[in-house]
Amino acid sequence: MSTSSRAGRVGSQIRSRAGHGTSRVRKPAFYLLTVAFVAFLLFALREAMAMVVTAWLGGYAFPIHRVHHVMIGGTLAVFVATVAVQLYRPSKRVGALQAALAFAVAAFVLTVIASGLMAAGEILVFLVPVVLIALLHPARGELLPRLEGADRRVLAVAGVGAIGFAALAVTEFVNHTTLADEHVTMGHYEFMLFGLVSIGLFGLLGALKPTGWRIPLYAAGALALLFAASSLAFPGGEQGSSLGTVGALAVLLWAIALLGVSEYVERGDSSEPPADNAASA
Image 1 (tube, rainbow, N blue to C red):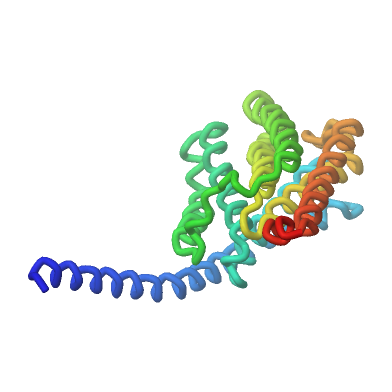
Image 2: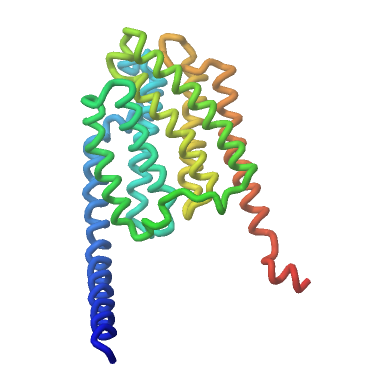
């Protein structure tokens, strides 16, 4: 064996051992970071997440903020859930982490646009850990969305919703930058801006059928239903972002269509015989 061949073989062995060692370190680091981040989120956001329930109750202390508080509580609860589920079989829940990344990135970018870099700096405490978790994730190679598994029917329904929620988000941006009411002071329009964009992104991510696609898709449907229900329950203009009856019904129908079409397509695909069996038949 030549000297160059031996050197190449030694180099390959070193790289293989280094890669194996990195993999062994990465997995426990992933779980430790995820546990720590989930614990932080539950501590820091527990009161905000509770609003998804308390804002419906009679005698609520902030009656003109019910719709906003329901959506803030619901969206944050979904965000925490998409991170927490990574602690069990994370390779089967890629879609959930995609949703967490989409929410954190949308929150940071849209806050920069709406309120400036200084205000967006506060979101880094959520964005940076999610990015680190993604880099350490056992299935990080699957985190980039792909079109191969998408069904055109589901993607079309999700696309309609994404356009609609983007239009609603534009309204929230205009309200945030032009009005001077309590909702602006409390940052509600700003949250609704990236919260609504996130619903559209969740729907699109689920429509692309990553591993664990139901989590982002059902998150989109659940948040859309929550927005519609709170708008129907609290329709007054003083709520700031209430959709009104027509808008709420449209969002309600979209959420039902998204979930219904997705499950119909999935069951249709699972009932089809494999290609080899079909050919032999």
